[in-house]
Every structure is written in C-alpha cells, then in structure tokens.
Image 1: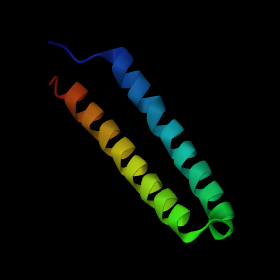
Image 2: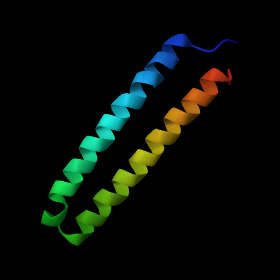
Image 3: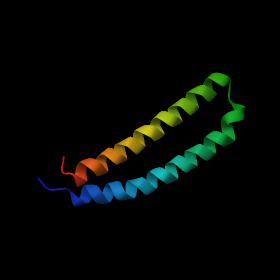
Image 4: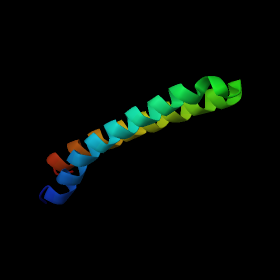
Length: 70
C-alpha cells in the first residue's frame, strides 16, 4: 500500500485553511464575547476549543497515517 498524494495535498492545504478559520473564529468570539449571557459564553468557548483540538488532531493523524502508509 502506498501513501496517497491527493490526500497529502489536501491535508497540506487544509492546515492553512484551518489556521485561517481558527484565527477568524477566535476574532469573532473575542468581539461578541461580552455581549452574550454567561452560559453562551461558556458554550462558545468550549465548542471552539473542542473543534480546534479535534481539527488539529485530525490533521496530525492524517499526516501520520498517510506518510507511514497506515
């Protein structure tokens, strides 16, 4: 089994798109944070952290799995 070049290219560009998404989402969260009730503040920060960590681990495992042919 060989590593997939199209998958590697998609992962490569997805890293940059994810960084832009994370930056834009973080800026929007910062701008509207003080306007929301406390429970929405908690939910938004929690969701942002979970999605950011999940996306980072997905990209890392994709790189690792594709390059090691697993």
